[in-house]
Amino acid sequence: MVSNRIKLIASLLSKSDKVLDVGTDHALLPIYLIKNDMVELADASDISSNVLINAKNNLSKSNLSNKINLYLSDGLKSIDVSRYNTLVICGMGYYTIRDILMDSNLETINKMIIQTNNHYSDFRTFIVSFGYKIKEEIWIQDQGIDYLIFNIEKGLQKLSNEEILCGVYNEKNIKYYENEIKKYEEVLKSIPNNLSNKINEINIIVDIYKSYLSREKTEEKN
Ligand SMILES: C[S@@+](CC[C@H](N)C(=O)[O-])C[C@H]1O[C@@H](n2cnc3c(N)ncnc32)[C@H](O)[C@@H]1O
Image 1 (cartoon, protein in one colour):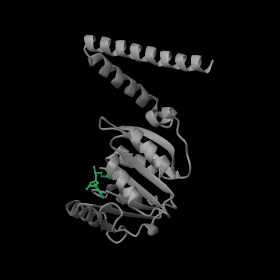
Image 2 (cartoon, protein in one colour; image 1 turned 180 degrees about the vertical axis):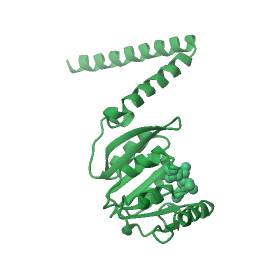
Image 3 (cartoon, protein in one colour; image 1 turned 90 degrees about the vertical axis):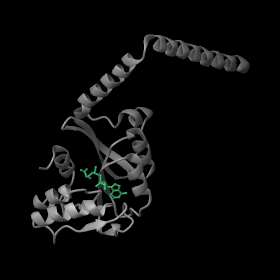
């Protein structure tokens, strides 16, 4: 069964895309893409040879063994990336994704669909410093789990501090932002009263120091 998350990822690809699905696991995405004639090319890779045994079985069950190439590779190290214009890297942690991208020559890669499992802010900061821009961030809840899918293309982008923290605004993600606020409010509620009073007190003191320092500077100038 192809999940709604995989279907969403597939919907962001188009007929002219030559796709490599990095960390494919069961090869569900490339099988779905080729079966539905959604892209020009869909190959797949994984770092684990065990995983690729399952992927190979799935290809043969779908009669697609001669249409989808499977590669055993740590990231893109053993792959001729110049065959592709699009990368999909989904379901991995930020540091793994960052290392895969930094270790590769991505000259031909115009588009990437990325779903990092964690460290969204670090990922946003990294990807815009790397010559790519975030076209869209799409939230999906699949089997009770929240996922953010990043639709990325080559180009320059500057993100505000707010965008680095909260993401590139998407009206369709309002429920996601509301859930995040609720999560933070729950964290605040779980802080014991005496501790939260202390935090407020310290914040007030720090604010007073800051305003005191800035007044000193202004007076010096005068
Ligand atoms: C949670 S699965 C995600 C599978 C699929 N991409 C998805 O989104 O459903 C993560 C997969 O990434 C693979 N992986 C982890 N590190 C990798 C690396 N450095 N290079 C290639 N594949 C990697 C794992 O072996 C695993 O099959």
